[in-house]
Image 1 (cartoon, protein in one colour):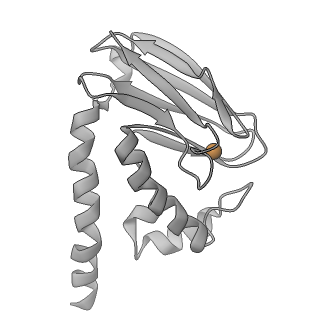
Image 2: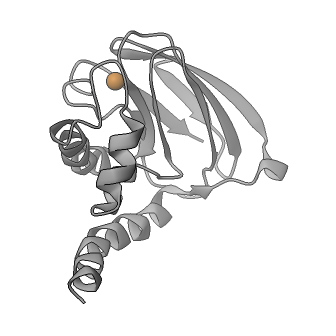
Amino acid sequence: MIRFFIFIFLSIPNLGFSASLHNIGEKGKSSEIDRIIEIKMYDNYFEPKEITIKKGETIKFLIKNFGSLVHEFNIATKKMHFEHQSEMMKMIENEILLGDSIDYEKMKEVAKIDHSMAHRHSNSVLLEPNMSGEIIWKFNTETRLEAACNIPGHYESGMVTKINKF
Ligand SMILES: [Cu+2]
C-alpha cells in the first residue's frame, strides 16, 4: 500500500513533464526521417551551435561525445531546460551522474524509487565520453526550441545549440 502511494506521488511530476512534451514536437518514426544531423559534444559546447529545421521535418540526430565529461543533448524549451536542471542535480546528489561516467547500476537502483532518475526521455540522450547516441525528433510545433546540456554549469558555460525553424 505504501509503495502504491509512493508510486502515485512520484508519477505526478513525470506526467507533467510528458504532457509538456507535446508542445515541442514528438518522437519521430525511423521510417519518416527527412534528414540526419550530426552533433558533436565537447567540454562544454556543441558543434554546430545553430541548426535550421523546416517545420514538420523529422530529423535523426547522431550525437557523439568527444569531451572528457558526461554530456546531455536535450531538445526542449529554455524553460524546460531550467526545470530539468534540478533533475540533473538530483542525479549528481544520488551519485548516478559522476563527472566522467554514469553509474548505471546506481541509476537502476534509485529509479525503482524515483522514476525520473532513469533519465529516459525520448527528447534527450545522456552520454559518457566517447559514447554515441541518437534521437529521432519530429518538429511539428511552432514552439521556440533549443538543444542543451543540463548538467549543472554546462548550459551556463555555453552548451546550447539554437534551433531555427522556417
Ligand atoms: Cu554538458
